[in-house]
Image 1 (cartoon, rainbow, N blue to C red):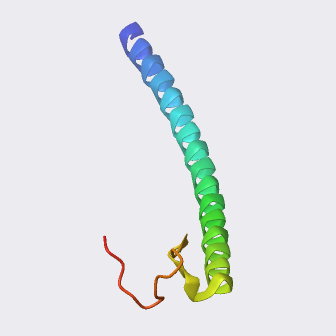
Image 2 (cartoon, one colour):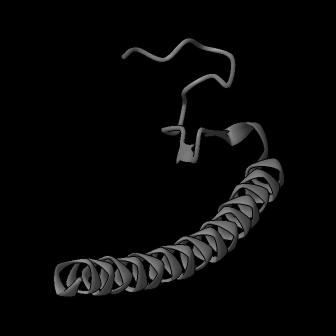
Length: 79
């Protein structure tokens, strides 16, 4: 009988530990999801800002790099 009680207590301790681990995992996942959303929002703002600046700078830029003086806007770039 004592053996059954000891086994039950050991299983209950393990169950308690697993539940605590699950709760911690869920907390970490929620935190990561929050951080992912914040990062996605930041990236979207950056893309928007880059797009606006590129439009404001007009055809004199190529992917954020100014063209050297004398280079035609429609000339293909080497590289």
